[in-house]
Length: 270
Image (cartoon, rainbow, N blue to C red):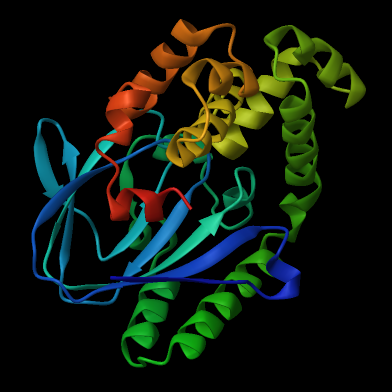
């Protein structure tokens, strides 16, 4: 199993957190759980293996070109066969630059990116399949995103505003600060909610909760502090509040999670 991260070109660094290539030569079938990250991803499956996700009480095969919407609850996945996957991990607000739909329509699902973008992304998938050189594959994806960024440049002002608002919420995560944040940006609180949801798929409160959970998840995985300290360091009211939120996002208590960490789950959280 091999996982490599790649930086985007300088122009795309404000929009793409990173690219990654995941390769597995093992035929072992396994199941895992994906947790909410606050970010959306696009994934090109370039190998022979099959990924499935838990939908309507059954495992369903994911598309060859996947668009992961905002995951707001634990999502079970299953792997069969050998894989080569190229992923694009966007920042919380930045997927909106590249897609014309309101981002919230993709929440808690793995959509077919071909249905969203059409032939351009299908052609890119073919090009990616025609080369095995990792750097060439990254360059192809980078060029594809640059073209879409240029075509959607009219969105930049609005989505930049969303980025600044999200930064403000990270600094002041309490819900009662939203009125102040909205006033600071010259908009109403109601429009702030609408703007963030349309461009991230999350309400301001959900964004704050997932951001806090992700911070706590990293501390739990390190296993260097007692849970009480992790709870307060992560901004929870108390340990019971922390455990309740953690379980809602993972399906595990923090202690049970430590006993069930898998290599793939750790990679998916990067």
